[in-house]
Length: 127
Image (cartoon, rainbow, N blue to C red; front, side):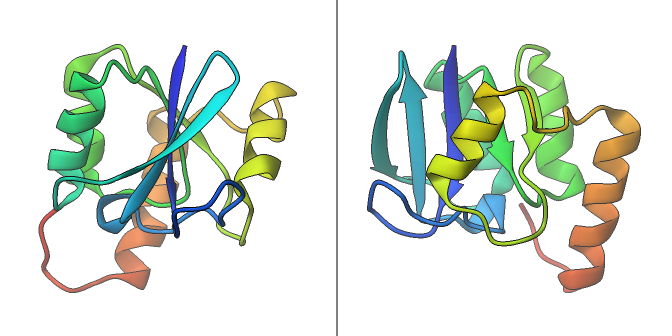
């Protein structure tokens, strides 16, 4: 399993970045090792492509728009988990994931996340 989590800064226990497509950094977690890497692309769909090319199969996140979500769905092998909308640190999100305490985002749950995202970020922008 390779997990990607958008984070706000390049440090080991950074807060989760609320906006998936605009995150400057991603925590890549594999075999219990956390590596913070700079996001080399712009926009949610490009981020999904980059993560898929990086062999990520699990994403923990707070917010995502409908276009990046459609891109995730197009791959068919990436699982999304919601860390909630409140501030949470990377270590806490990983501990919750390890304890199976993060909700899996299916179609109906993701619809709520997308609606929340669109209310908070109504500008016509691309992901």
